[in-house]
Image 1: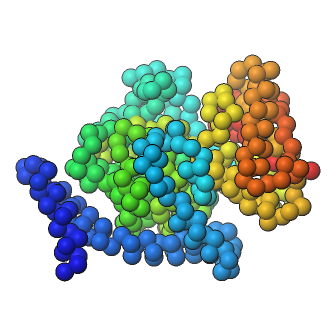
Image 2: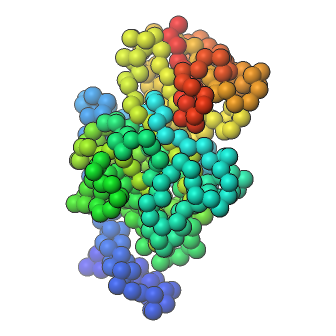
Image 3: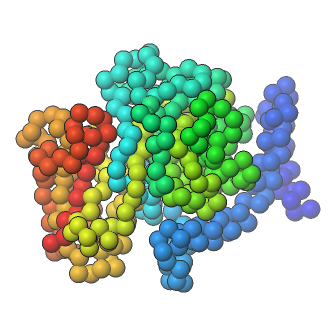
Length: 419
């Protein structure tokens, strides 16, 4: 009886505000599933927290009760609570919104296309269009990749090999649904990030596994037998169209974690092993994407300090030609803060580095201001300022060639050198 009363107001809303002719079979099925998901939402999230803790322990090599308690607190605290936060675009989110973010990008960039020099209304130079139509566009003053609607447009990175995904990798990008808001959109819109085996030459059929946002309130990360997981209510409400949303995916062998706008929405240890390549697919609605970054690895930072005396991070990101830290940098900053609190003897020189684009003197000043900004942020997060110094090197110490977008991306970095 209780479930009936929970479902009744939602059903009356649908009947009153959606024209009957639009209620096709697919829509009715999704509405029915949504009513069920709303009723079970609390149960799912309680179970999800326990699963997340187990997977975190597998990734981090921890299993004690203290760690589990801290992880539970972090998961519960990472959901923004104010209406102001819900209306903000990803590009204008505050660092505080990501304060419990634990996603850390890989440390070797293998694909990061630079769209800035590509002409509008042309096919992308760095992506393969496997199905449908896609083109470069200028949107809000920057170049983006547009995947057109209704054709199930599918694009994949243009790489020299069909087997470019390592056992451990991260994938990030910003995406925007193109739509008019409404109930129909909220239940039938979706997009997929598909991970495929090497032999899947035509990118056809069901992938090895996928991350799919189903509607705006559910996701699935796994093979075709994997069940969907409901989003926290605040995230589901904020997943509107015509707004940028940040997607981040971490994979290490059979372990996977997926994040949307700073929320960890799925964690699993059931991924099939053997993914070789990736593609992004739009479904009913068109989508825009930008800031695509695929990176390999992610070595344990303390081990790197012991063996090399330093570690490199590409996870601290800045606005273009500025020293302001982007919100999604909080995953790397949280990891570094935790490391320094666990090892009170560690002291670091924070080194800022740029690529070779632009003026040498300007790059030197920019790298110094960025290193200073990282130092200030770590002090705000509880690290004693006497344990940190900051120095900018501009473009003088490249670790990769500056003749490809990926090489430049690897050179744009922050290093933590033990002192």
